[in-house]
Length: 69
Image (cartoon, rainbow, N blue to C red):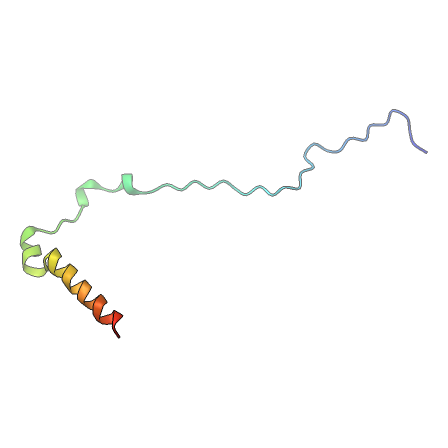
């Protein structure tokens, strides 16, 4: 038998959806120490490195050689 004026309310927090935690990502780019940045001198570049044009040429030669294997 059914009661008159009965409140058949469901709980308000009766949710079956999954809520994932919010995650905020932040880069550390703005937080580096500006006094401890390493630089390579022009002299060291001239003595120990190859020019950009030669580097490109060597890369293209290697790609060409590997492509034809």
